[in-house]
Image 1 (tube, rainbow, N blue to C red):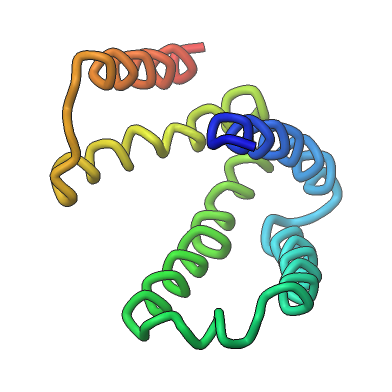
Image 2 (image 1 turned 180 degrees about the vertical axis):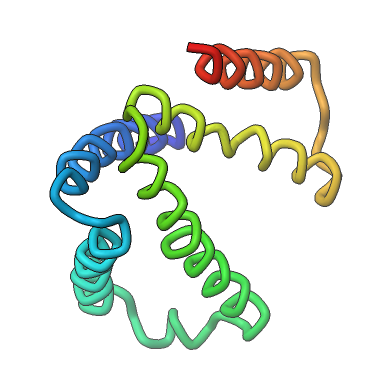
Amino acid sequence: MDAFLWAMVSASIWGVVPLLEKIGLMKSTPLAGLFYRCIGVVIGLVVLLCVVKPREIRSVDPRSAFLLVLSGFLASFIAQICFYNGLKLGQVSRVVPVSGSYPFISFLLGVVLLGESFSPQKMAGVFLIITGIWALRLG
């Protein structure tokens, strides 16, 4: 599979998951919901441990390991708490697109911190993201 197909599969899965989460949060608090979501992550970790080779894990340098652990904590715990609170209080059709606008922030940080290129096509994408967030905020 090429990168585009992998991205489409992940987008499809990420598109279905918030519906499951919204339904699960109907009779749950966001923190209790996060607890049960983490059980799914632990199951995934057990499966991963059966597949990944120990030398592959040990080959990661300490700085990279720290950054990956930090990203996991921020994305899978801190941001997930924020997302679940928004999902509990709001509509899936508004909360998911706004919280899913993180590519805009990644784009800006990539240009500023990593020196990535800035093109008219990327600017058009940024404009569309900002316009979409604005439209969802109004409606």
